[in-house]
Length: 248
Image (tube, rainbow, N blue to C red):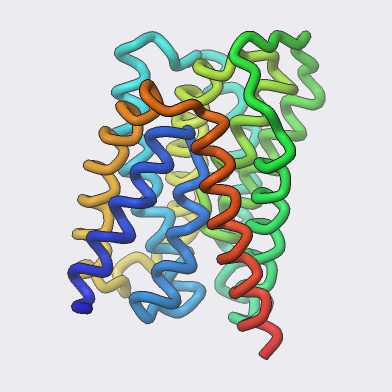
């Protein structure tokens, strides 16, 4: 299969997950770039940030039109993660490739298990705790910076349980958080962006943007719980493969 077709297919799947779940698709971008498209771990995490930033911003605009983005809350949550995201982005290039792959696999596996155990509650409301919100935002930023993922698979549960958002609002607002964190991490990696293979990254991002629109429509037809379980099982398999590869 040609590189272009692989990039388009992977991008479409990742965009679909981002649009439907408000996150999660980006955590597949890094392994897709490494194992399907031949990127190094550092280049893959940088390329992933580019893809995630543009895809999340596009998907966010669709959710915003439906009134599902809580701008003030999302920006405050994201603000706590900007510093850690930039610091993590600066440190990522100094981490050995095997260690970066293993760390990514552990985080992806933990996220998959959390998604399998977490039920979606459309009307859940929990009192906001500012300290926990800041800590969650900072932790999310650090993960974004180091591993090159948007962090939506962590942002949605945090926005629901820590900030008391309804699930629909959490999905839309997480895309705002992902966009801000990804751009902050990219700012710290500015010197590595020029070395990316844009003939691969461009089609990948384009397919992801189109997939995100389809993902939003899919979310209205298939239950979020079903989508979440399917994605979590795929993510768990990818995490296991990457952990084995890192240990080899």
